[in-house]
Image (cartoon, rainbow, N blue to C red):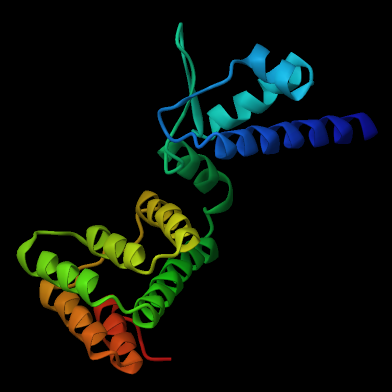
Length: 207
């Protein structure tokens, strides 16, 4: 039992060090990471432990191994991660409701941040885009989350969006005017109007 716990701690520590190495080197999706042998030497751990950590990261879709080329970083939004976690933790109805509710809460907080960081030029460009472009709900709220300028919210929302779509939850059927009304509410700088427009778009009851 103690040996298993010890192995687990080594494995987790290796994953943490690989992540820190990726960040410190400024690597991004598509970039190549060190080989199993190089990681073993750099981290001063056994190759079997490195192999286990790399296999776990590959299973989650965070890295991929290309025969004859090496190991490369994948986009963290890869569907392997979404599908794997959905299979184990998001099957009951309560979990599905929580995904939807959490996604909505983040969108609302992003709207509050947009109001707090009000950037007239960026919002004007967003408004012009919404009026002229054909877009779906994901397209629209991706821009909302980006306008909030909070990277953690962005990453969480992206994963929740993928969960939401993978689970086949109710698709949003708002009209374009509903989206434009939300933008108008943002320009009003009135938080109550913004929340009211959002709830109307999402067909949510008032609290």
